[in-house]
Image (cartoon, rainbow, N blue to C red; front, top):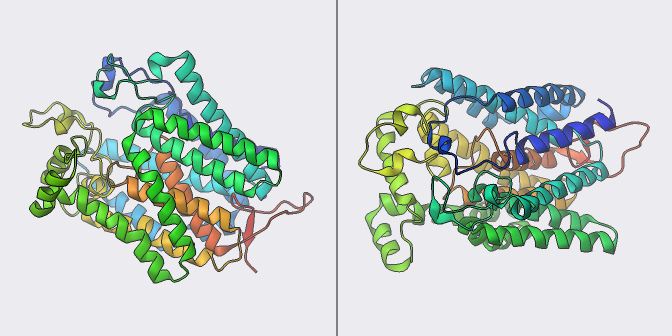
Length: 437
């Protein structure tokens, strides 16, 4: 595609995940209580169109695209395909696996589409501004479908929390965090003082929206993420970076899910925390872990457990069967593809990105871009202890995490080009890179 075609694809892919085909979902509609097994026709058509454009972009950037395919990722996708055929709902798993592969392809192509750093930053700026503006537009002009209310058929306790055009405040929260990180990256790489001031103002607006979502998870993890990212960036030893990146996440996992597995940890949480249930998540974790016992190896099948009719309509002694997901990334993966899938996910999404960031620091590429990807990845790793960001086919959470994982791998292995010639476009990922020579 031409430079203009690549730009149009970049915006279309961004809109597909950040706006979706069903913005401003009405949570007062009782249909949200129904099992979520049927596909969405408008989303399927949009995915197919963007997927076709993605294939063109990847063909133009074959060498860079192959660089992004890690052994860990290929093992994950292969095992997930196995769990499709062992699924308790094979038709559902097939559809969701196809969507999953499509999202992976589109996200990689999205990173490769911009032909230089200038185009990447310009497109990111305008796309991000539109998303932020749309969220505020909803709050001001469409509050009934942009702010949680007591009329919602579920979780009336969320009344007053802003969600904008996103489906839930727990989606709007991480969205605003990622937007905030985009604005900080653009501010740090802007040349003019006026541009820096504009990006800082946009960052402040994102932070304000985040505050009004009342998404305590995202708000509480924000400062932790900044501190850890700064420490990892300054620590040059891989071993120290692994400790700084993994130990806090592991301790958080011990405090959260560990409180329902280990009685001493649960007793400590009861004494020290104002909400030892983590907003009733402990009920979901106990239920999910109990269900997992008979499906340890391959789970229930790829994305074939939560929100299915047999689960939602079954009688249980707990409300947790009506939850939309496990509220923990690895437990959610284990229910979908077993402990094998969870282990492979740790290899691909937890261990490899830190090693890639370390390698990128030796590459001579733009450290601010590497820091952007690191911050997104680190926030999502912490966030995964209380939510389920992995392999979600729709929405910006998985798209942002997957983009950061691909971005770190490419940033570590390709040579960045700051200003390629306009007469000879460079095949490059989002940061304007080409294969190292």
